[in-house]
Length: 397
Image (cartoon, rainbow, N blue to C red; front, side, top):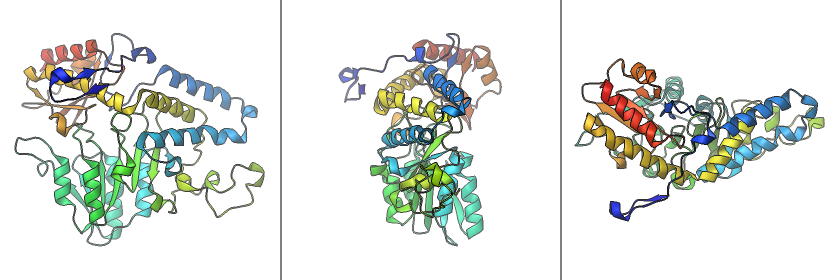
């Protein structure tokens, strides 16, 4: 781990070594684009193949197989965020999780739902619909409102200045998906609760790479898709539901979420009572026999590495890249205002239209989101990957 002390000479470096051998990434590929979609570890792919093989022989599937691995995923997801397994529902997407929140939260005429400008669309569209139907409005905090005196973006201060008595819901990420600008969720949560507002979080761009504890933040609902920083498959994720909302209304009325569903012989003895905790919010067919083992395997590896260790390792990687591109005129947010695993690099005069294709020609993969070149490495990246990116940017800017 890296312990950031008062001076560079006091820093003790014990980083997670390169994990590239766990991934099927050719040596010529510099993939610095985990915020777009993570590659899958070899053992995650193998878990999926075994699941497909099992489904091809359904006579080997038992009723227990519908419950065992999903419950393991529920437990591991809870550990990532400091929750209890009973607080976790299994979902296919962020939009599904946000829809669960809109179904249970309220906004009155004249009240506001606070979001950030350029926030990911899945955490915008449902709130716009909800506000339109119920007479509320969506208050989009602009980047100009979040500008500091030196031109950087401080979303935390802007949120604290905006939340007020007419705020019904604060629906935000942990870090902004375009450039990694970070939000102090503990302070924002305290301000929201002081005004009676609900806090709904989409942590897809941070969970697994940035520590979070729901006991400290106290969100009402928290959503994470697994195909980015959780290193998991597409169409899987989890939803944290605070205990106060666990008796709420789910999107679906599936059989497996009902009391006694483990006994397949008695499924026609219809039950009004649900399984305890947040299980009622599980997606239909949550027992997916290839996706759930893949997610379980990925989560197990993240927990073995430790999110704190991952975060510190990735901060060193992004710090190295930021220092190398600074002479090229590329500006990254200061470390106290960005997530350590994210670099949103801005170019004076704007990003050239042909930059991404030019990088791809050299087998280098990053993203452009908004006005930022988004560089998001993970443990599979090496110093050579970073140096290739720096060299290519120097050639093409």
